[in-house]
Image 1 (cartoon, rainbow, N blue to C red):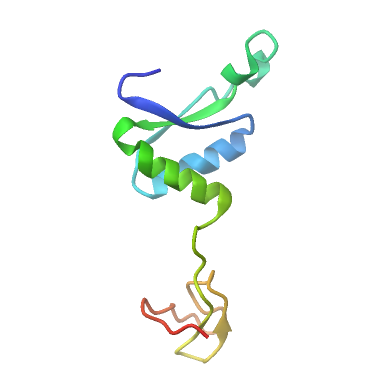
Image 2 (cartoon, helix red, strand yellow):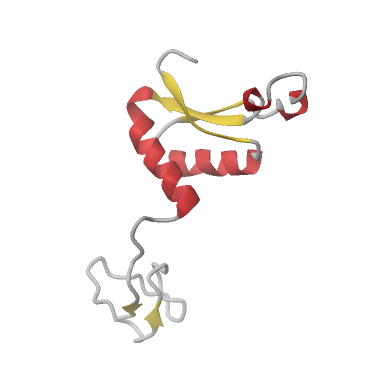
Amino acid sequence: MSAGQVCVFRHSNVLLVSHVRNVIESAGLSATLRNMTLAGGAGELPPDQCEAEVWVAIEAEWQAGQLVREALDGPAVSAPAWRCAGCGERLDGVFDRCWQCGHERPTEFASI
């Protein structure tokens, strides 16, 4: 373990590990990838020691943990459907912009 850093995610799938790191960094936190090329050592080394890992500063552990859970499980609360003020199109809550006219979802919007 590195001084001042903690592992917040590990997995054998390096693409998933990279995705988690990208989610953490897009939130403004610094994250480091480790063990990205050790998968070939499994068998000679314990399998759990060969998994790719994402490390963050100890101070960011809680926030990074929340981001990891959201990246893997989806947001805790889904946004309600909304109606575009530009064209009246009904849109699901996952959309931030109207697919038909391009208007952004207002920050204060009425669900339908």
